[in-house]
Amino acid sequence: MLGLLRNLCQRLGIGSAAADAEALQAATVFSAPEDIVAEEGAWQAGFDVDSRFYPWLLGAYGKQVQHGSDKPLLIALERLVRADFSDARHIPRVPSVLPQLLKSLRNENVSGDELASHIGRDVSLVAEIISEVNSSYYSPADKISSLDNAIRLLGINGLRLLVARTAFRPLIQLQSGRITCVVAPLIWEQSEKCAQACRLLAQERGLDGFHAYLAGLVQNIGLIIAFRSLDQIMVAPVMPLATEFRLRFLHMAHILSYRIAKEWDFPDAVMQALKDQVSHDGPLQDLGLVLKQAGDISKIRLLVNAAVISDDDEDLHLAADAEMQRCFTALHVQEKDEA
Image (cartoon, rainbow, N blue to C red):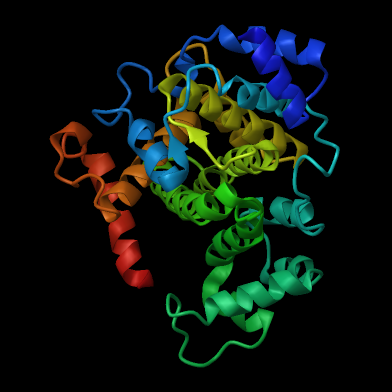
């Protein structure tokens, strides 16, 4: 079996036979990572959300495959996780204006003129913002045609959220590869809902709402990169559904998100929340807990919308936690407003 898999690794072009054989042996030793399961005592759905969300996300591309045939994919992911992220081939480049813009957005005392100055350096970002403020969600009385008018309509706080969402949408909607083309729009939809849920939960707990919003938006960038990378090496567009593979795949996607956000110089609070999804020594706290809970709530919202589960399913345990129920309901209200 090891020889057959080594040959398959060579066919897929994921490294030398010797190196891949070593990585393969490491990949076969696996225990479910505790760091992606909510700690005892913290709110969680009554079932493993990802066990429902992952197959739904993959649709027809999710398959039960022969035991052991998923190891080359895990090897490829292990190599990606350890890659040099200064290499533009591995991670997308953020808009050149974004790093400085993020610093300005984090400043609660920033002026509209200062934000306009940064945003105005990126013509495509300006166009996206103006297009967004003219959408049915904002429904301005008169058509907005300038950045200054957009800022006046949105206000500083509204602009902060819109700029973050607009800047990161293209990065998470990277649609290259057969599976990635299918999952990217759904992952972005979940990212937006997660960001909104993060902000709501953070505000209720006295945490920084904008940091929470950023964490919700960026947590799935690693998932997209992982899908895109596997798309490039798979002979057939098939993703294994086995629990062991799913846990390992999502765990490495969390690591990728952390590493990418670090490369992009995200705020320390966001970095800590992302790190908490990968590894933590005790119960999740503060923004890390918010991110975990918002991720579950946003996934449940999509599953309910798709009629995969019912919102009164007793296994959800949503009704038992008033804060979670309010957040879950708020996402639904927002969907109606955007319709």
